[in-house]
Length: 364
Ligand code: TXA
Ligand code: MG
Picture 1 (tube, rainbow, N blue to C red):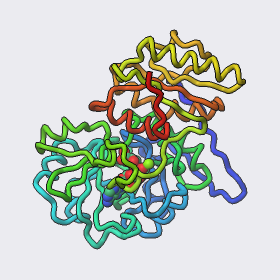
Picture 2 (tube, protein in one colour):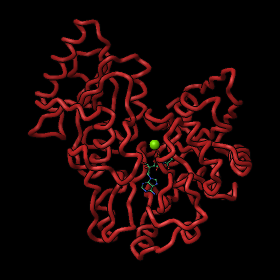
Picture 3 (cartoon, helix red, strand yellow):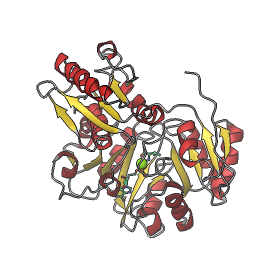
Picture 4 (cartoon, helix red, strand yellow):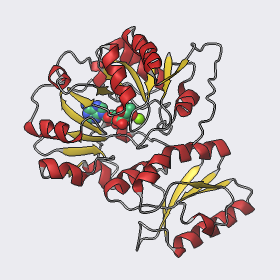
C-alpha cells in the first residue's frame, strides 16, 4: 500500500509536532522527548499508542489532556523486559509468569496489584496496574532508549476509533503532542487482550487477538467479564475504559445480522441492506456499506468500504478502524455493516463493532 503523505494541522495554540520515521534516528529523537517528559505517538503491533513516562504523574495528566480522556480511565504501562514486572507489581501469581512466557512480547496486557512507585495518575486511582510488552521493534527500542516505562493509551482523540496509521494519529493529535513515529500501518489493528490476574480465575476484561482458547491452553479455565457478554446495563465493566462509547463514526452505524447464521452475510442480509439503502438514498442520505470483499458486488449502494474477507478475521481486524474513519471522511449519514462470528478473533471484532454501533443490530 502506498502511504498517503501525512499532513499535520497546526493551529494558533498548537505545539510543533515532529513527524519522524521508525529508524534509529527517529527513535532516538522520540526517546529523548519521552525522557524529557514529553509525549510521543508510536506504532505497536496492535494500534498506535500515545506514550509518556509511566512513573510521572505530570506525563499521565498530559496524556489525558491531549486525548481529551477522562482521568479515571487508567493507562497501560509498556515495558521491554519481563523483569520490569517485579518493579511495577506485587503478588505476581505463577499463571502471570506462564502467560508472559507464552505471549510476550505480544498483544496481551495483564492486570496485577501495583507497587507504590506507579502513580495513581497512571492507574486512574486503582490499586492495580495494567502491563504489556509490545512486540513491535520500534516500540521496544523506544522503551529501551528512553530509559523509562511508557504509559500509553491508544493515540486517538477519546471516543474516536484507535489509530492504525501515523496519518490517523496526525488527524487526531497533530499540534497537541511532541513527536509521531511513523511505522506504517500496524499489523493487528485492534487493541491488546486484557486479562485480570488479581482474582481466583484469570478474567478477560477486553477481548483481542490473544483469544480465550489461547489463554486457556496455558492457564486452564479463563472467564470473561460478565459486563462484556450480558446485555445488562447495570453491570459495570471491570476495565473502566470499556464503559465509554468508543470507536464511533459520526454517522449512525447499524449491524445487519441473520439470526440463523450470524457469521455469514446471507442473501437475507444482502436483501435487507439493499432495501434500507434504497429508502435512505431516496431521502438523499449518504449511505455507506461496510462489506467483506467477497460480498461487495452484491450491494446496490455505490459507497462501499471493504473490511477484509469473511472467515479471515485477521484481514477484518486490520481494516476495521481505518474503515470507520473512512466513513467520516466520506461524510456518511448512515452506515450498514455485515456481522461476524463471535468466537475467537471474531469475538474481539464484534466487541468493537457493536460498541461503534451503540449495539444497534438489525436482525433478519
Ligand atoms: O493494544 C493496546 O493495548 C494499546 C497499545 C497502544 O498498546 N493500548 C490501549 O490502551 O488500547 P487504552 O488506554 O486505549 O486502553 C486501555 C484499557 C482501558 O479500557 C482501561 O480502562 C484498561 O485498559 N485498564 C488499564 N489499567 C487497568 C486496570 N488497572 N484495571 C482494569 N482495566 C485497566
Ligand atoms: Mg483506547
